[in-house]
Image 1 (cartoon, rainbow, N blue to C red):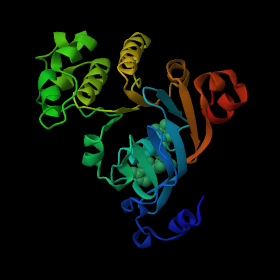
Image 2: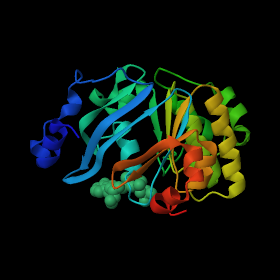
Image 3: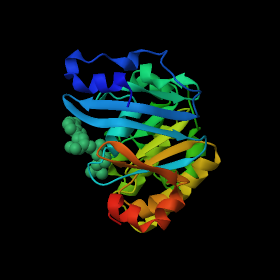
Length: 263
Ligand SMILES: Nc1ncnc2c1ncn2[C@@H]1O[C@H](COP(=O)(O)OP(=O)(O)OP(=O)(O)O)[C@@H](O)[C@H]1O
């Protein structure tokens, strides 16, 4: 950790300098997505403790770790949500510095989070949920293209979104993200509560999304399923990276799986 980062962590939240507002502290030429030494707090709670990793364009990265390891917090920090707040570090996406952006600017730059609770808007049909995502530029996939990817959504286009099954709601949440012109899809526990056959279906769509060149970061409790799909994996423990390598390395390493994933 750099001196500045240590300095940031020692101070109470209100006194901490907000290094995220400083654009000119990049040390190296960024990868497609480069997360560099990010530190983030919920109020006084220091949760994301110097996380760094790179993601290549079109890759699926499984971000794994035990309950409470900091996976959701890391995703939220990368998406530039206010909570937890980024106090130090850099996030570069395709030469754009997301660490200086608010969440709506990061979304416009192509970083979109599909949260665990999916946030389907009540009172709106499937199609209206998608259309709402396309109200502002830049627009991504057309509605017809989204229905090709998710035929179930096409069949239910006039049904109220919140009345869909859990799996269909997850598909709608992903479709809504793709309806924007995105570069990186951040998925928080997309398989949660879903039957294996629905997980199979969602997995197939994630493979198709990958083939279109979109980069995905997948946070999943179902680590085996995530690793079988992913190219690479980053494992977190108490808010820090303890492993960065290929998904196969994790699947082949019993000790790593037992120590950090309990599988
Ligand atoms: N809003 C919050 N305020 C304070 N602490 C929080 C908040 N949200 C999460 N935390 C704490 O941050 C730590 C990391 O939580 P996080 O949800 O990022 O972990 P996770 O790896 O995604 O866990 P899980 O797999 O259980 O979802 C936990 O100790 C949690 O209690």
